[in-house]
Image 1 (spheres, rainbow, N blue to C red):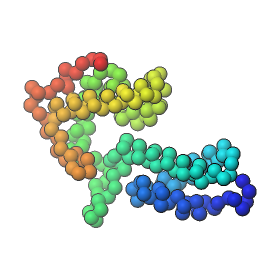
Image 2 (image 1 turned 90 degrees about the horizontal axis):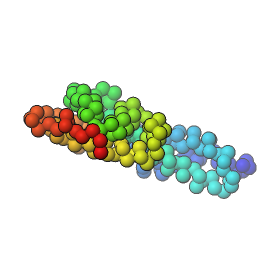
Image 3 (image 1 turned 180 degrees about the horizontal axis):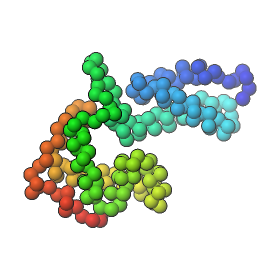
Image 4 (image 1 turned 45 degrees about the horizontal axis):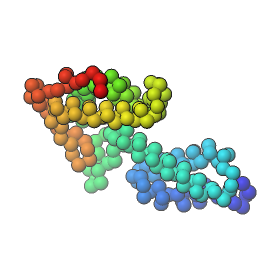
Length: 194
């Protein structure tokens, strides 16, 4: 690119900041912008037309924003924002006692799932692999892995709701978990395949 058509990183950041700020929580704006510039550096050599820099940059920004949303969905406790009214939020690295209790039960519920769903949820939710990496590891297509993860989540929720009464607050954090009557529990009678 010619010197007069290059844009200073600060100018580009100021141009992108409002775009990103409308789409991610305030605390994530700088992180997403940094991710945009890292991705831009990697992909800039493939940019053939210098007039396409801004569309390219916004496409990269959209991709970084989507990844930010995925990350927040994948790890909601680690991404929890402090409460707006000044009360300090609980340290997101330490789950509440109720969440610890539920986590202790969760492994046995995942183990009760049919094999393909158990494997999909173990790889993606418990081991933290992306769905693409999990698909590669198991030798199935990405769409097949996505389907297994979605169905596995539905089945896991059904097992949990059959065995426990779980209440969440407005932010989706668990505030109460009470076991139902053991005779109502269906988690041990889950089918082996689907």
